Amino acid sequence: MKHFTSVRGLGRDELESLIATSIAYATGGSVEPVLGDRSVALMFFERSTRTRLSFQLAAEKLGAHVLNLDPSRSSTGKGESLRDTALTVGSIGADIFVVRHSEPGVPDLVGEWTGLPVVNAGDGVREHPTQALVDLVTLRRHFGDLTGLRVGIVGDIRHSRVANSLSSALPTMGIDLAFIGPEEFLPTQVDGVVMSTDLDEVIGGLDVVYLLRVQTERGAEVSADYSGRYRLDESRAALMAESAVVMHPGPLNRGVEVVDEVADGPRSLILHQVSNGVPARMAVLSSLERSLV
Ligand code: CP
Image (cartoon, rainbow, N blue to C red; front, side):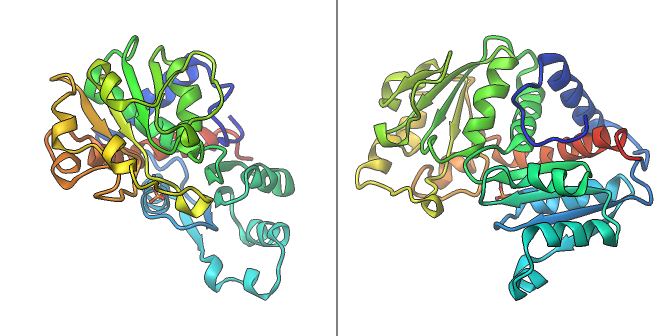
């Protein structure tokens, strides 16, 4: 694999291989420094806590140097173009780029401009492929077999790059997917995905209630009745099957899509998702290592 900018086009075998490598990193002993003396450039033009820090730790655990570009203090503020910034960071010595940007497709452009491997750490509303891998690893570690698992993604699906990546990765793994939210947050029909505006009607049939934040930074608005219809509070969580779990890619807007008692409760896998971020990103970076010259 030269780049990891999308999960679309990845088959079940490729995802299984990445999941297995992630779990080996999560549960194994010593780690071979396969990126020893290599440099990984983190270029995050949008805010991040989980993805940026877990990529940093993943790269360091694999033996890489980390070049951490801070756009608010870089020469992009003096008018340097994105292309010149990427070429400059490549010339300084980056071997792999990890890019987050508000514009869809920028990570692919960085790959074209520099000829170097790129990981998409989230590009606008398009994709967040490593979050999809993190979630598959979390599901595999919790449930084991994924075939026939019923996952309902709840909330602002239309503006969510996470939902977009999951809408490809979950069905590829044999998982049944439903999108649940108000009309204005549901996408137009996606093949094989069930759509519903009524969470209370479908929640009892789900194995996973996967909550999303309303992406106000992308123009979405929280309607007056949003929390009343979609917030996972204790009374709504009581409608879930006994074995069902709660997931969320973070960051949470507590009180809007979820309440503290559920987010921090025994059925929540939210911090497991965060913990799986490091081994999953180690798996992605080590898979790119083979394409380095
Ligand atoms: N899930 C996720 O991408 O979180 P961050 O924005 O904190 O990286």
